[in-house]
Image 1 (cartoon, helix red, strand yellow):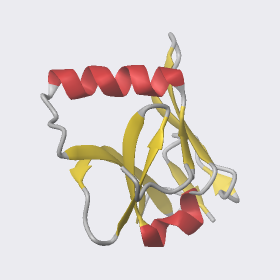
Image 2 (cartoon, helix red, strand yellow):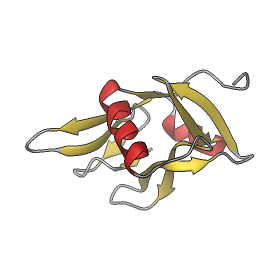
Image 3 (tube, one colour):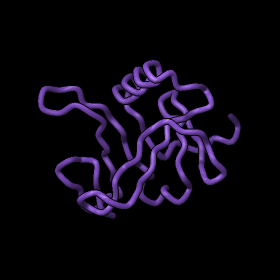
Image 4 (cartoon, one colour):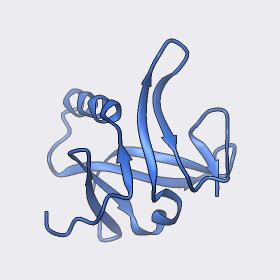
Length: 114
């Protein structure tokens, strides 16, 4: 994969472990990579996108912690430096986003403003 760029998104070990489980359970093929992105909406203005998808001409591809990741080039301004983790505790369970670009986040942890 010689067209990979430096990793703008960091996946923690916990996130990769959970993503591998999801890939196995949903029989995700090698044609798919993890898509990290943003979309308008949510209680703070933007919501995160996290799912498996095929790369398009609008995407940049890179590897984070051994996992292929794709991101729409236009989303980089909102996502460069973000860390995706997976929490598995009694109070919280799910993916979390630590985004240094967010000026404000909401209580649900999946919405932010920039």
